[in-house]
Length: 255
Image 1 (cartoon, helix red, strand yellow):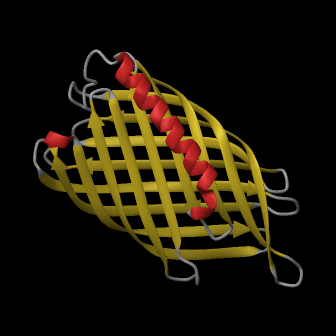
Image 2: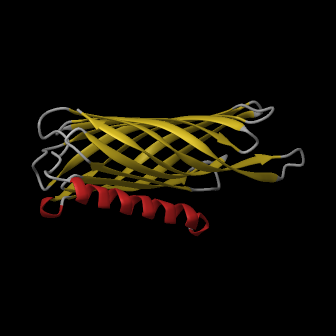
Image 3: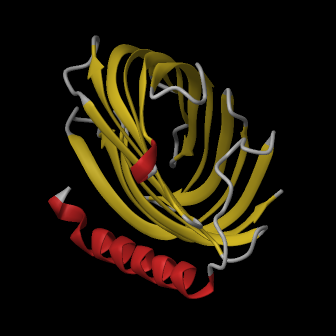
């Protein structure tokens, strides 16, 4: 992660600005997701992405090309005391003026919403479509997970360590690759007044490939009114063909 120091600095600066904005404008607490039934959140996002694309040349050597490009995304979430469903669709450009479209979908079911210790089961699907010159790459990763949920309500913290399994398929014009993987991860949620932060990390233990992968996702949301706010999103993803770092910022509408 040290190679992404400028991105990390930008993330921390934007996060600090969001927190200052929330402290300056907050007059009430934002209800936790699901406290009043089903809550919806929609957030268009804009920022930049740094992509490292790894391809084999005709001699079999791996060549790495990098690209910094704008990224456009749309995040949507439905939250209830017993379940949370969210989807993130994005578009950007990778090395070689390559168009990239991706979508991350996650659905989680929870036990007793008032218990200090309960359970969680979830499923998700990650998708990338990458179109470099003379190539067409599709990455599809269905996954499932389960783990305990630990709530420290006085501090607004929730911890969800989990284990899971992923079925990664990589389709190219030159052949297909499958890579089933064990997942070891943790999700941490923190809420204070009109500020909410969600941090996800998981380690992908590959069974077919020699490489293992790290994934980090951070979402910071601050309410400016009871319905409007701002969001900051940071993603770092390692895959067999690409490594991506992105930072996105945009408005949030809650209803």
